[in-house]
View 1 (spheres, rainbow, N blue to C red):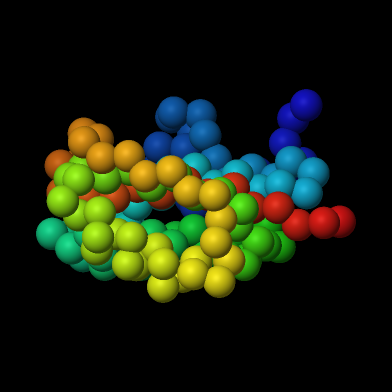
View 2: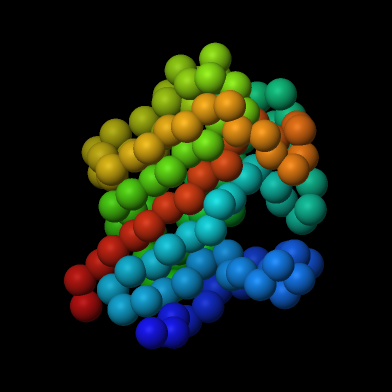
Length: 130
């Protein structure tokens, strides 16, 4: 089944690699791995906490909004960390946004990102009854 709607960030890699920022499939939206990159520039360099906040609030939330969803609709997150020692800072930022929502979450560390200054990448899945 093809996606009902494709959400684009306008980034140059979407067509080259063949992906969308997010896809809507029925009552679900799946947001691709997102970093703290705004207009092609990584934000909050050296700050894992800041990268989580930016990725969730300024990259993922707008993609969800384009699909008619919000962070409150998130049912699953996947958090990828370059450094395991950033877990507490990343967990704090994640918890500030999701403490009441409490989606299922996976956190993995030791990930080598394409840009070595990226400390965190996050994927989310959201669901909303029709």
